[in-house]
Length: 106
Image 1 (cartoon, one colour):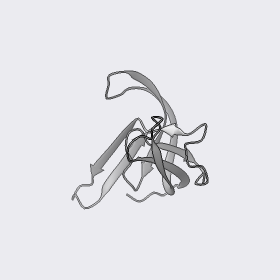
Image 2: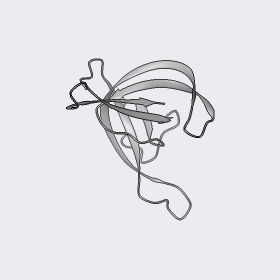
Image 3: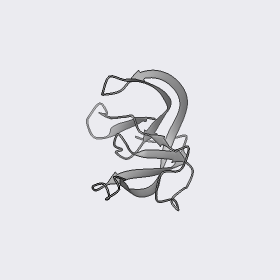
Image 4: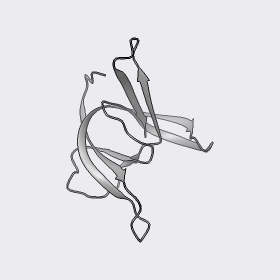
């Protein structure tokens, strides 16, 4: 996937088990994404309704439960206030299965 309109985003990707207080640990890094702001009523995998905030075209795999925010916040080891949780992630192959389009809904 070639991302033409790029925004720098920070990703907090959950890693490993929870600590003794029940908090996850995160791998923090930046990447480029196409951030399309929109709001839509959607249904999660658990069947509950939620309102989406944006759709991101990314060039890496994300997981449901990861957090993203526009800008460089790699100095923060945990998601900042205003970071968006990834609610859905879809990886779709192109017509000849050599490349993939990756979309995350937050």
